[in-house]
Amino acid sequence: MFKNTQDNQQLNVDNIPAHVAIIMDGNGRWAQKRHLPRIAGHKRGMETVKTITKVASDIGVKVLTLYAFSTENWKRPHDEVSYLMGLPVKFFNDFVPDLIKNNVQVRVMGLIDQLPAQTQKAVNDAVKDTADCTGMVLNFALNYGSRLDMTMAVQKIGRQVKAGILDPNKITDQTIDDNLMTSFLGQLADPDLLIRTSGEERISNFLLWQIAYSELVFTDVLWPDFDKSVFEQMILEYQHRDRRFGGIKTSK
Image (tube, rainbow, N blue to C red; front, side, top):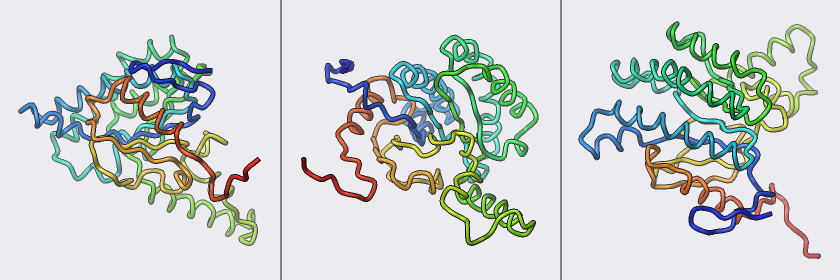
């Protein structure tokens, strides 16, 4: 089945990536180009999150993982970090009713217990309030870093080996999957498509294990300008890729 995009191109609804991960980059540059404070870009970017969440849910994405705040982002100016920590409070207060209406479940991964109390409450309340939703999972990576994720997974596995629960010779890829922060996603833990906005072409410590066979798509569009049309173009690009997972396709 095909669906026309805003540009009248054909989107194959039978080949929608089950898990889309996005590195939302360019908020600060969007603001600076308009001679606005950086926080104006973050505020506008929050509206983009709402738009893309609805679009992704409507076209059949099962998991949308958004890189909201990395473990390295604490190095940013204090005022900017403080503003970013307040965003989830306003975002979830405004958006949770729409998420429930659209049957979207909120999940969050990262070191949540290190966040300010009001941020933790907003996040935990959103997870609780949408827990019964059975549609798309909106997964925020908040105070998340992939190397930290893998380090913690190794520590967990090490403790299991030390306790005699796990034979080190039986450690597999699945063992590692089961101990990463994405483990709750089960078979959907690995993104099919990773998008990065703003023209940067790097991964920035995001889902390093999980994107081993993800399709990577980069766009010059800054996150606050990333809209339904651009997102659909990224999906079309994904649909034109030939995914072989290290193998080859034999001719019939």
